[in-house]
Length: 245
Image (tube, rainbow, N blue to C red):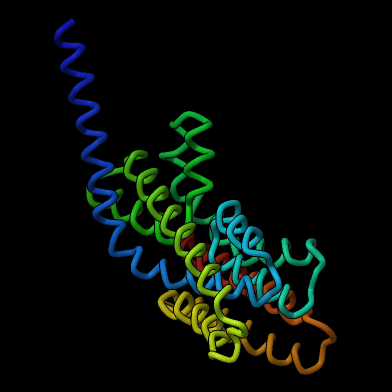
């Protein structure tokens, strides 16, 4: 009996150490997340969303890039939820790749825990978890703590942005509208690390500009996303075939 109690105590101690290490690793990342959350809250107001709608978007969606795209489309007068959902789905296709890389570890966990971890899987939590796997192996408690900390930081920063935005009559006069494209550039630039990402980015950018000039409405957003996804998929398949040969 004593050995069982000792084993349980050791296991609990190990879990707590994982959680503490995860929090320590996540805190520096929060410094980059909080400004985006505040900007998201402010821009939600400018798009005509209510304070509650903006906060609920962060609580239920918890995907910065998708939220910024949805807010941009709403600001542009696009109210068709089908188009907004399709666009954000295309932007978040990378989550399939991130999920696939963690699947060998997460599939061993209870379904409920898999669902929670999947909801909390964002770029930052994936990067930290992948780094943890490379250094010490996979830990569900490490990933969970990381996701929870980022989720709380995102929710609080969005709320701060909503409150701050409510005291600014016209945030666009303050030049805050530049925050959105600047945010996308900050998210995009670190990912341009190879030929494939650069080619996809250039093709999507050129397509978007030409589409904005010659296509009606905001269809250039959908067209650029689709073409970039197809070209990226074709390049990845070609690279995989080269390695197979």
